Amino acid sequence: QKEVEQDPGPLSVPEGAIVSLNCTYSNSAFQYFMWYRQYSRKGPELLMYTYSSGNKEDGRFTAQVDKSSKYISLFIRDSQPSDSATYLCAMSVEKTQGGSEKLVFGKGTKLTVNP
Amino acid sequence: DAGITQSPRHKVTETGTPVTLRCHQTENHRYMYWYRQDPGHGLRLIHYSYGVKDTDKGEVSDGYSVSRSKTEDFLLTLESATSSQTSVYFCAIARGNEQYFGPGTRLTVT
Image 1: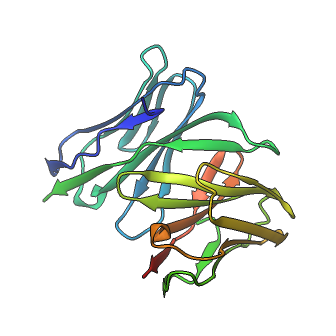
Image 2 (image 1 turned 30 degrees about the horizontal axis):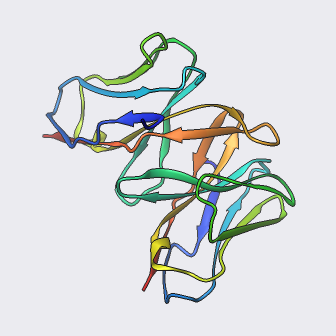
């Protein structure tokens, strides 16, 4: 079993729809949870960062962590064509030598928002 | 924008040749990382650095070496490139617990 599972999609929705993106994980020690957005041929861009359980909202984006179910979600409200991208979840627990976080990534879900 | 640049942005090289990719940052961050991204595998950590001359291996380090002689530069070297190293390579820095990525280098080994 992979540490982080993410449905690759592709996911296609009409403009204005609510989008739900999800990841499941197996390591109950994960504490930090992130969502990255990656446009085609660009580097990943940090979208949301959450520590432990609960919700975090930023504009049209809401990140949700359910540690009891080992499940994280990203909701996009009023989706726009400019939201079309690949969304990567990432999580960490382990400190590398020297104190930095070591991230484990999902494989990404490709989202297309149609006008 | 985390002030990260990568060079070259694109490179085509032949099997068996050495290749060096450069990551440059302008914000004096301590932690720097090299990842590769491949279809079906996602982002995987190759090597990382936690200070000048301080580096360690990641998940997929075989065939790669790194060096960091000054804070702002982190070099990734493929000593003898193989076709399996065709990939997109991303550099990242850590700002607190958050990692920020550069624009990537697209490497093709023929």
